Length: 127
Image 1 (cartoon, rainbow, N blue to C red):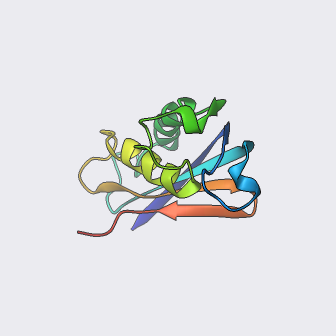
Image 2 (image 1 turned 90 degrees about the horizontal axis):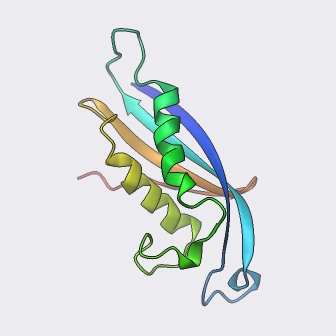
């Protein structure tokens, strides 16, 4: 099994409505998002998938959120709080729709870092 990982960053503000602490107030993060792609078969060049292509597709999704107040970006979170958890699921679902994921190559997970010390990973349940 081969596993590639790419990272992109964006800046955005949010607040966690109903949180019993400082995160209920407006604040911002320098978010880092990592995508992990897995597969067993390499292409004719010996690559699973081009890093540059995965990074481009991830960046297109993150550009929608860059320098935004995430709480106002509905319906992208379907009315949910813009937590790192909800954003990881959203980014996963958006990126997984891409046709770069052909037979034998799949998006394994998305990891959203809201600080250098705190992140959440999302991968769907196996069916």
